Image (tube, rainbow, N blue to C red; front, side, top):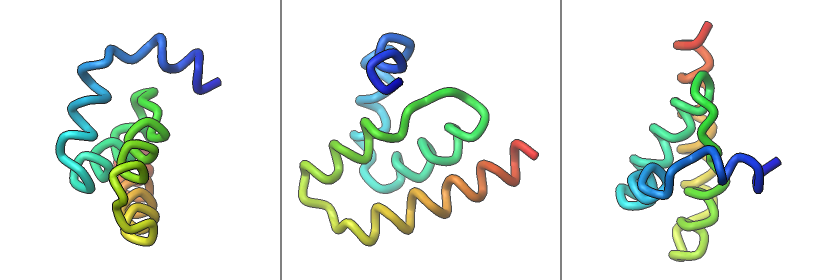
Length: 72
């Protein structure tokens, strides 16, 4: 599934979210509720950059919940 999704997303979009760190992850999580943007790319890039795992979890969870409210 992830491999298929990588072909749908231009590399510039993935670079946009990873460029802005946790703020980009928040918007990626929020937008992925109604636009098929994989959050795994941004999450993996932030983990590789040694970002705090708990911060990543909290930011992604809050972004996904807010995105779900917006999409509802």
